Length: 405
Image 1: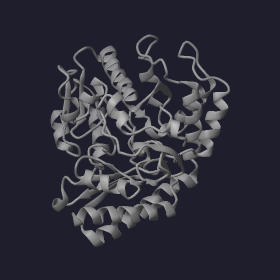
Image 2: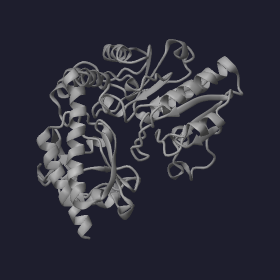
Image 3: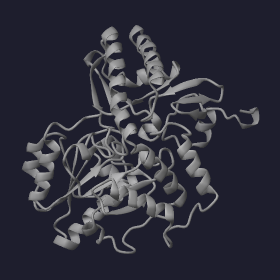
Image 4: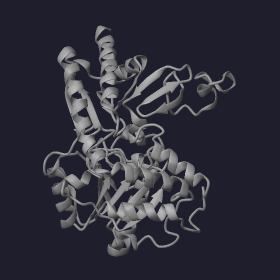
């Protein structure tokens, strides 16, 4: 990088709204599961842009798709349709329960569309009384005011005035609590099939099935937020596909574009009929540039060797974390599925997840947290074994520093 193009981290504090607290380094370029900063220092990427960069950085199929489409059309808005959007929608319906697709630009927007559809269906089919949305504590569904209210973490939703109403939060994995509360005025139950931001919390055996049965009993819709779990992240294209439970509506984003902003809401013909022209929309949703890249990502991720490789890589991660824990005794368990994993800190190290994140960065490793007590890993689905081993060596050095104080 030439000197005239370099920027300093302090510029962030001068020109950006302080919603974030980014690392001191500024990335310059990446390849595969490695990133280099402006100074030329290399980092192993176990974060994947928070479960977004499912094929790593600058994967050839993504670069080729972007380059080809960039010479054709970038934007049309929805006064017209376009070929990449239609091809991608066809592919998503082939790969899932869904018949119809609505495009957005993010997971929050996909969830917003899902919630609006659920409320619209309930109003038109059953009347104004059927409006309650049930969600779960520690859930996360995005940052729009509707989705952050439905998400079960008050720290994200408090402080903005009156919230959208008729939203109830119940404990995740507590089917008795749901059975006691759900009623015929419940419009929908929204949930992550495996909680991400809330600490990488998997569903207990039978929980998803029981939720589906209660929704059916009370004629409520089941909405799965697969923004983080979808697109191969857990070893199947969508996490619900290994549970035997189908939702009525599904939100997908993050890995869908592999790094280009795109989200989608998937649903059935019957439900989609309630989204008539003018009911909802998005200026950039279905953008041909984004859809062309997402189509290439989906076609790559769904290759059998890639999906099988996710489970193989999960074991490599678990083996590495177990070896570290044998030395330092810092984790109580490793939770999650595929390459959505969380190493939960034991009671002696509670609240220290961010300390490990910072120390890892100093050692040239990018990781995430999921709350104060969980170190989260969401790397590329095709990360090499060599990169995993080197990343684990850097993580061990980081943990050794934290333990040593």
